[in-house]
Each structure stands twice: as structure tokens, then as C-alpha cells.
Length: 283
Image (cartoon, rainbow, N blue to C red):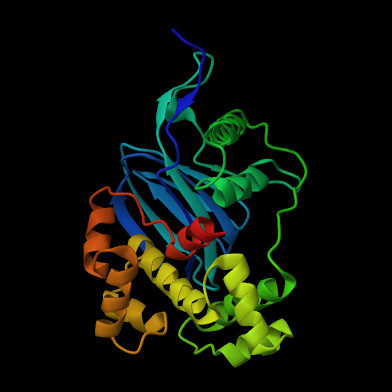
């Protein structure tokens, strides 16, 4: 027998947002998934077991059961996630049936900074470091050794950060709201021309492309992780018609909204955000 922990690389990573009262599932879990409740509360059901997952907590979804999420009925919910599989665990660990479903994170915990680090670098960072991060996180979660300090993250140019913060704020209030270049430039406190140059240099995309991809990423997550209809998601994400939404979605993800949803519900991995992929490929 071996005392080595062996995990697969993450098969999907991302951040999902939901309006009040949304649900996700039921789904049949075929791999492991960490879920970080960034904003809002949730109720998580796995088989016959139900746990509360308040904002800040970390959920570990496991294969072999049908699970279901009921998001906060009073406010918007936002969570990070990544999927992976476990090939071997140390002999000294409890069996996976005895692992906790949720950990409440105190101030200074190690789980959230490591989760943030993994979401940032899983696609382009060193694979060995990614494996170490995942092993460290799962070990800390299972054994309950989760306290540490917060760690800072690298920033984009200040004007781009301000523009992205504006997009996030507007989407949180109304994901269908129109966002113009002039709106972004005003909030970023630079000229439209200069903002376009900054976006191109730091992300490889124009501000308009960035907003459109952000809408498509949000739509993809709602398709994969909610029960809203395709037409409802198209409207919620600011597309003029379901036809326009489907055409843009297929251009970005290579399949129709319905095909992607069906694939995920049959056990396929959730989609990689297009915006994240393009930025990391171009920077």
C-alpha cells in the first residue's frame, strides 16, 4: 500500500454567478468538485444528506451520488469551482465517505487563497505546482488544517481593473444592461482610445469583445449550472434574441447552448471560460 496522494489535473475551472432563488441539478457526480461560496449562501444536497454552505465556505462534491444546489433566495450568489479526480489517497486518511461535505472558513484560512491561486494559474501555470496546490488543498480540507494568511494577486493595469470592476458591478445589478465603450472609459478615467490600447496590450481583446465574452461566459455557466431555460439565459445575459445568442455562443464554444447543457448533464466537464482562455493565450 502507498501513502502517496495522487490526483488528476483539474478538468474544468471557473466562477459562476446566479440571481436570487436559482437552483442547479439534480446531477449525477462522476468526479470530484471543490466549490467556493464567494458571495451568498447555499444549501447543498448529496443523496440523502443536506448541509448549509454559507458565504465563504468550501464544499467538496464527490462522485457516486446525485447532488443538488439551492442558491440563496434573498441575494445573488457567486462561487468558484474546479473539477478533478482522486486516484489514490494516503493509508492514514479516513475513507472518502467520512470526508466532510463542507468546511466553514475562518479568517486567515488556507483554502480560499489556494483556490484563488489555482483558478488563476490552472491553465498556464507550472503543472507540478498545480498538482502541489491541489494536493495541499485537499489535504488541508480533509484533515481540517486550514488556517493561514491571505495572499495578494497580480493586477492588470489600473484603468483595465476599473473597467472590469464596472462590468462586474453592472452585471451584478443587471446582467442584461448595455455597456458601451464610453461607459467603460468614463469609469476607467481614461479616453476611449487609450482604454482600447490598454485592453489590447493586457488582454489581447478590445473592450467590446471583452464585454461580449463576459456575457457568453456567464451564459455558459448558467447553462451548465442552473435550471434556467436557454431563452431565459439569453435574455438574462443581454442578448437581443435567442437566435443571436445561439449563434454567438456556438462561435465561442463550438456547440449550441442546448448541446453544451446536455453534455454537462451527461457527466461532461463544464466549459472553460472563453474570456479566460483568450486572455491567457494572448498575454
